[in-house]
Length: 165
Image (cartoon, rainbow, N blue to C red; front, side):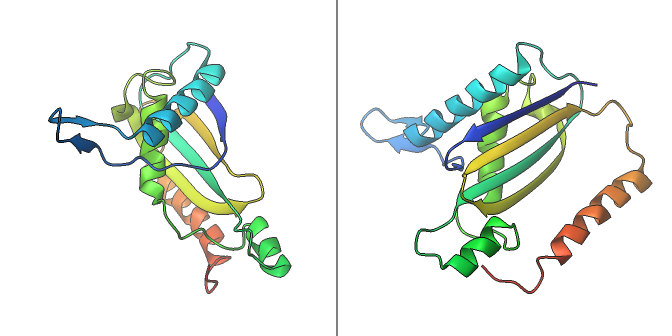
């Protein structure tokens, strides 16, 4: 089964809502969203090399936001070690949508193929989005395997419990 991995450099951007131009009476996608989706397309295209994923696919997305400049050294270390979740805007679902829309037609035919998504938001000295997409195959995971996969992610959540951002 095929796998496509790529990194989108720079500050992650969430998909913004369409805007309405009252003069032309048309909706349009904000420039910031268009630019980011074009960057995603460029990175995905470089990795996919024209070979699209087929059938159901899974996506793993790790979103890294910049550490605020005013952060103390102690706090900066915690943030860089992924001990603190990023809980500020943009919302994770909007970043996922920007990644999937930017990849659609390049890494896969249509975002309706996405059957599983795992995504997290962290801080980093190197802001970026790391993306892994792979074909799943029909009926690849049994219900038991899916449950085990999800419970494995709970362990990573437990290491973050009780910590605020």
